[in-house]
Length: 384
Image (tube, rainbow, N blue to C red):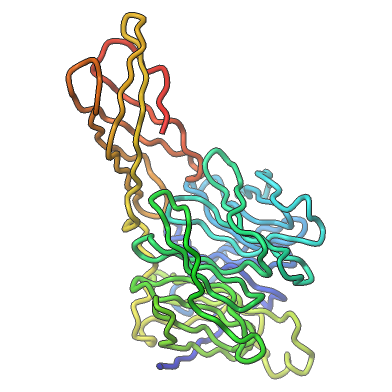
């Protein structure tokens, strides 16, 4: 196992730094100050991190992800809610997944998936077991509970091919893996890595590199560990403070590991020994000698749909089924894409039609499929 060192690259001392994320469109590093309810934006190139702006909301802020239309801001998790934070600092609430459990349960870590949906977990403020859940906020702005009975829902990530999701429940110290279907849904939960919370720390946030390896921040362990997809420990990045919380791969060359840390629960004596606690740390890919290139989401598996279309010709209702409609997501969020659909049966001759998947700027709401056809008349509706 190889070992490396990370260095502090910011000066602010956060009580609980969280949710480091790299915005590859704006080339900015994002992170949050949980208890201050503050989002930071910074330019980052290796160890040079310069804050360009910050935004503060009332209450706590635990997670953030940029919207597809960067000019419209970010989706954030604040207290028991999900909301849009715009560049003027204004909030627009989307949903309150844990409103019924306020104030004892709050939102925790969250991240956008390769399909443009936002996954967000929750936990009891006092860490009571089985009070947390994992939610997915997606198309048509609905929020769905995916998992329940969790303790501290934490880090999330996806394999380069989009077929495996990794998830951390910090309470029992377990990293799980799930099979992922073409729509981004998960099934077949497996325990991949088991930590001993009493010895060596517990898993917190994570990210996945281009080789499919997991980088996991180990709270109480003074380190970010690198694991193979099979769960083998293969490298360790050491920090001079014991409480790393989150990590992300970014920088101008997307080869730097950025790590958030915390001062929470450290005594005055411990803080004297760990003066950099609460800063953002970084480890350069060149010194790590590992491919820290961010997860290439364009390689996510295509989504396949079967379409059933209805239209009228001279007042008569017609129907056709389409097969093998492949819709591939490109870059970091869904874009409008095109695919061909073969008519399986119809009153007219076999033909090809072109369908287009239209996505909203959020990258999470999918509008109905629009179609162009060679028949006279109009489609009444198209469902998928």
